[in-house]
Structure formats: C-alpha cells, structure tokens
Image (cartoon, rainbow, N blue to C red; front, side, top):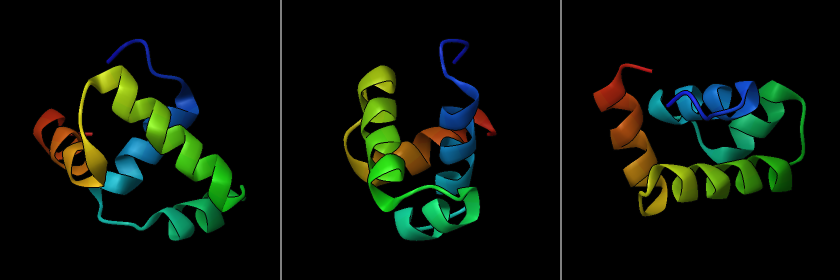
Length: 63
C-alpha cells in the first residue's frame, strides 16, 4: 500500500469506516467528483471491484 497518496489513504480509511462518497467529500472539503475519482483510482491501484471491495480491503489491512 506504499504507492498510495496521502489523499488516497484518507479516502480509503473513511470508506473503511463506512462513509459514503458525499460524506467523504464534505469531510475533506472537496467535491463529490474528486472523492469519486479518488475512489476509482484506489480501485484500480488495489485491484478491487466496487466500493465494497475497497471497504473490505481497508478493513482487512487495518486502515
């Protein structure tokens, strides 16, 4: 997981806590589209499908 940016780590942690993308965007002070794009980049980098895959990855890795 060393290849993730600080923002990607933040988003992954919030997804792991069960936050929706709009809530993540609001908390980080970014647009929904930015949060969604970061989520898409995470899915590609981590090789997972969907938000549930990201949540599982975050939980399994202890993020």
